[in-house]
Amino acid sequence: MSTRSRGRPRVDSARPETRTAILTAAREIFAERGFERTTMRAIASRAGVDAALIHHYFGTKDTLTVEALRPDIDPAAVFRGLTVDTPGLGTVFVTRVLTVWENDVPQRERGTALLRIAVTHDPVAERMRTFFFGLARHVLGDMAADDDRDLRIALIASHILGILMMRYVLRLPEIADADIATLAGRVGPVIEQYLTGPPGSPVE
Image (cartoon, rainbow, N blue to C red; front, top):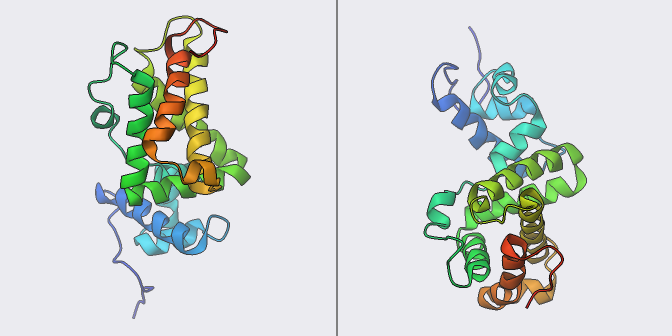
């Protein structure tokens, strides 16, 4: 008589639910054990798939980590209506980013976990940078001035990630305890400078 390990039923590798099952299992086990103690074998067992399928879909544990923990948001919905002519563009942009992180607890927990792992694990950090920079380019590409566009967008991404790190991971009191309106009002003009200001010009 054959035996089967406890856990979810085996998942058919050809079904579209397979990838979702792997990601769900990965999120659960990362939350339970942390990054270092999570193994591909444990994720496969929880998902009810062969471990080879994880390599098929995601390649490495580092790639799976970013895919499983990156915030699942719809940029088109979050930033709908923003254009280069939006009054107080930078302030509105920062407000919307922080509002998502503040109000959507599951997404915040995933994003915070990813930031913590990236601080100490370079391969995850590299993939996270690629994801966040790509997201920033998607959202802000049409609004950033042509000169040094990638640098402008990279500066915005780094500034926003820094705020998220200080507010939700390191919990610096001045940032963690500030309300969104205060942070957005202070940071917004800097974001606008990055987007459209002449290089080297001071923030007004």
